[in-house]
Length: 95
Image (cartoon, rainbow, N blue to C red; front, side, top):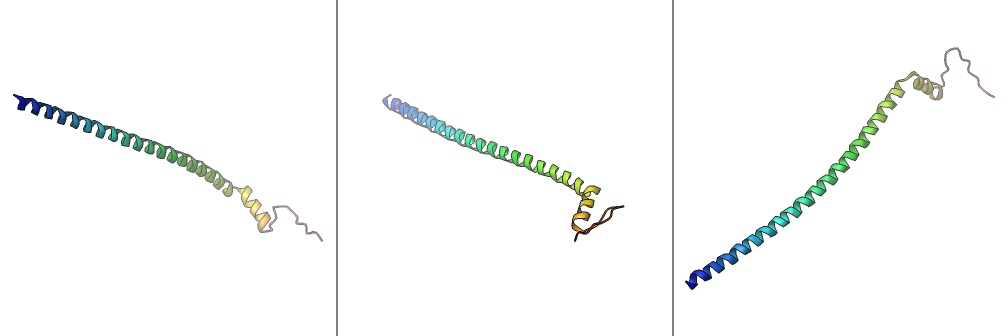
């Protein structure tokens, strides 16, 4: 009967050790998962900020494009860079 009692004690020790090892592995897995989640959340926030910045730049580019297509811009370029004059205007050249 003592052999069975010794075997039971050995089995209990093995089961407790296995449960402890399993608990440690689960804890490590939890920590790795939390670190991974924090990293993914940080990356998501950074990408959302980049997206907002790119959308703002896209809107600015669209508004600039509308201005560049306008008659006002074309007239300004013609006057300043091409030395052209407007309708019914007289050019004046100083001494």
